[in-house]
Length: 227
Length: 181
Image 1: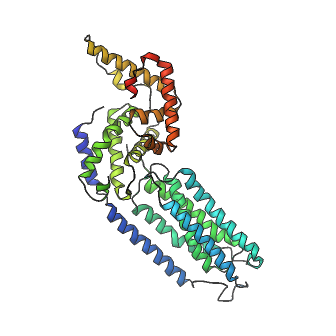
Image 2: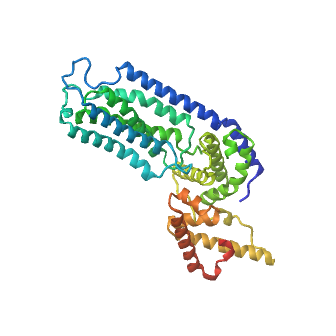
Image 3: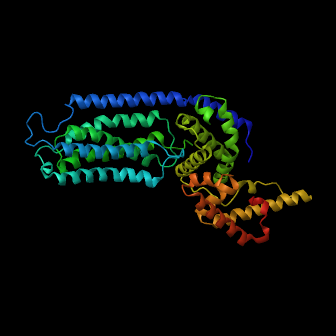
């Protein structure tokens, strides 16, 4: 099986037309998108009122969350989110990324661990388990999605990756990791910590982001034949 | 690849020279069609080119390139709704008639051995065949083949050895040791 010079020149010309960005150029764009995402999330967080231990308006008949409870849940969520981010956004020692088992573990276990951690502290402070009628969690859900959906898609595009092994699973893991990071801000902001509210408002958006990440991963980083 | 990722356009030619022969052999072996293999080779290199910004320092190019090629093959065969044949070589069908000179006999014998090896390989489990072909035919190191197949280097070694053992058992003296080296 010999390579013809004509094939080489055909491929070289096609590559020139591709005009792919260099590593430095792509890194600059990734940094810009990351900064924009962080600033947007921070702006949204403070616009909505920043940290809420209880309800500052007094409209929700709920006692303030104990400071230990808030610190414990935020520290736990931050630690889980940091580990998930690191595992999902780095590729280990290979261009092919992490093994499928790792990616699935991040995507599936992260929401479970986050919910379990919250429930554990709920049990330590039973007054936080109170559910508030009419506060299902749609605000928290929208807040999380508003902070993370566009950066997830933007980063999938500007990183310019080609993931021939598991684009969907990688995207799902990244969606979950970003949802977990946003969940830390939502946890600081939301005064309601009842399990049903947490499940709908804080965990469900992470699962939605898992699906969105999987779709973005498949479409934007997957390898497909045109022929 | 490092230089190409940093913006040295001329380095892409070197990447091509280093990878293209092995990739084309791999693609041709799977498709049995020169035109399709060349198209898939072009697509493989365009994917590498498009993702150069994501190439990180110290990463291995070969397993990445082979996995891209493998994914493109799978995708192309799905699109064409047909199984990619692996046990027959179209080149054999179009081979010239055997000549009478001693060198021609050697070529014919080598072809017969190659054909027999392919038939025996097609009878093996897919996992063993893949490991064997990547290491012995495509020239990937155990570590590189392990990355492509997502298994440990020891598992690659074991699968390739089992394939080799099965070949030796079924072909006996017919198997030219040089073919496997």
